[in-house]
Image (tube, rainbow, N blue to C red):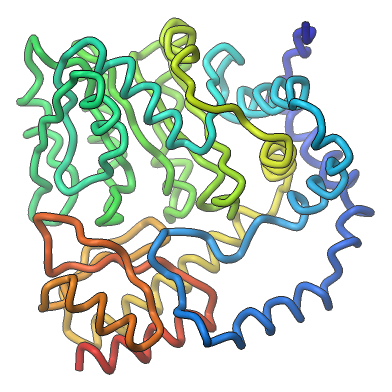
Length: 378
């Protein structure tokens, strides 16, 4: 049995962050700057395959600290990451200002969406969600007998919180808010969302999916994670797939009331892996990576918006690592035309069937995308 790790306060966590980064300095040298630069040149030079900017992945990661941690842990990959998982949970709890029993690790945040969806679906109740929005939790609930209640976005393609609140009734088992929303990239006003969540949580649990919030301009002002520690019936989902660039490593977590955490853990469908766990721990202790990557993503986002504006196309105000805009043609046609220009864009999102979602890639990838957009939408 793994012994309980000592509790850390935020000051101690910050000290451990600095120490952790310093401890990885030697291993980081294994991934030299020239080698990384050559890798970037080689990757950007390959144009025999389409540019993949369809999956909302972060092409800049994982961080050097995460890569070094995986190299160091390679010899332990024959072991189950029981101790390492407990250490990661403690880091998460300290970062998020909650207790370890509020934390549930997942194989990506998708598993958190699944197990919470299964749990409330088994209650045969209704899940209120935005339309269009991310559907994984609702689909999981419906697979167990639940029912999704879709509420159209408002004119700005944002969550219509008053309309969603009006849908709460005796059959409602959960409220789901994806903020920033996928596929539109829009965020809800922080004060409005907080008031909404506190009020709605008095009636039903409120699940706030913050997978893309690290990409937003003001993360600290936007996150609702403190509501969990304050005792509200709220769930927050996070992932290492986006800002941390670890989509292929499949690591995520949920912050939720301890009672709910205990109830949903047995519904887990997989288990976290050693490389993902150590990379996640190293990422949380990397003091600079998130801020640096956020700047890169914003630069790519702003450049893409500039092209869309020049083409006089309508778009949703984005705060994720993607942009959602109106193409003026059926999305299937747009996908085919962009693919012919060696660019893969996002799938259809009914009912907005003339709108496209494009993820932010490297500067080299976005240059190809910009040229393709100007040709296809001219």
